[in-house]
Image (tube, rainbow, N blue to C red; front, side):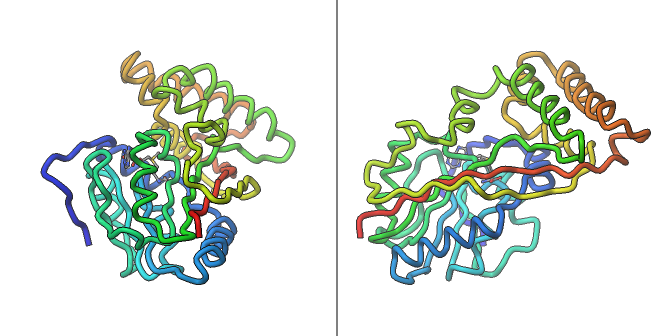
Length: 283
Ligand SMILES: C[S@@+](CC[C@H](N)C(=O)[O-])C[C@H]1O[C@@H](n2cnc3c(N)ncnc32)[C@H](O)[C@@H]1O
């Protein structure tokens, strides 16, 4: 089901970028989802009725929550992201809805056991977001702010040198081009006052989970294009310059790997380290 709120669509992510999101963005580690669901169960005394995923993008977290809740609603301000989220098989209890900025979420007061947001909160107007979270969560309901760091290549004997190349690209090439303070806030795992939910009764933090993905170097190049710092670099210096820094990254990784093949043929295990904070509302 896809529902629409209001008449104006604020498209944050365009169609081709949304398709790259679906292909390259990782799914959350099952262990993280399990811990989160158990925490919600504990805090709401078993009530796993409705979950809402704000800034759902192509639906990675939205779908992962589906087996544990009666319904899961994914909300996003980008129609392109929602179209892509809908283009793959979704469990029957998952639906999506277009938001206009910080509009009220299309759910009843005190009807939601869990609000999640993965790699999206740094785009929100947090006071307005917290107002919605306060309104929709049931007593004891949980707000989970989730994110992950730049993926780290894993290769026996070469992990450090490959990681250094990734971080050089992240810090020195696209680092200044992330919107506002987004990069710092993710690097700090949202541990700044801006992300402190005033109504939090209890807060737990986790950073022990990861998702391993084997991707071709070409796919890693595609992943890089979904980073807002890369988009910012492209807007600043143009398509050709952006293509050049991406190709340069892939060439450096290939050289370090010392494999005689192309970016398309070279498969690289990548690890996405996740972080999360779970905050529960007053019981
Ligand atoms: C980096 S993507 C993350 C997508 C997905 N949650 C994931 O884990 O891959 C951030 C998403 O937040 C959405 N977004 C940005 N501002 C928003 C807002 N104010 N309310 C809801 N969604 C927003 C964007 O359209 C985008 O789809």
